[in-house]
Length: 274
Image 1: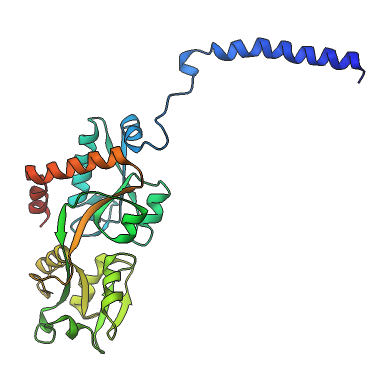
Image 2 (image 1 turned 30 degrees about the vertical axis):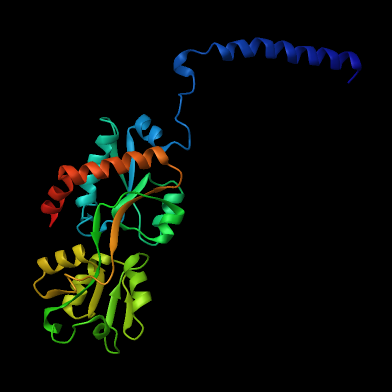
């Protein structure tokens, strides 16, 4: 291409750009990109979208349980709806199914805004995310058969050859078993909800879990008994699990947890489900 032709082509490019740019600047308001909350501000985004995404495992009664239709029920399912209303009147809950082994990974991947449903405070979660004020203090106990009450009295009785411990993976139950049980046989059961019935049926001898779950299981199945019900072997604090750095969101959740405690709303939820 000659120098003259190159100069003509360049002039045409500038001329077309001069025509196009004003047209872009004068697009009607409905065609302009909608303003969005800062990517790092979860609370602002929740208020703007009207959606609070809550991670629940659906396998930890009475905190969250999923039924045959896929619907979730439990203390923290109701609490999630109450939290959404506390954020803003228009905010609704969207439940996102997670699991104990993948909960931290899912939270860090942004699949939900916070995890609820009986999450225990521990060092790993505190390092990877933000943990709310405690809304329940519990501890690890043993769920055994009534028929075995003369056989098992202490933690040492449960950690012997010939005893089978059933445990769900990825949570503090498995951590407790790993740290405590050296001699008994340990069988990992993916579905936490199935374990109490398995113990009652004799397909295992003991389930280590938090007192609230064990007491509920024993209440529902008279074949079961809670060992160490009044003197748990650990102290477990139930919290809500948020992404790191969400200070405004964490402050709101903490204030809401405190109000739920002082107003008696948590007590009403426990009474409803227990």
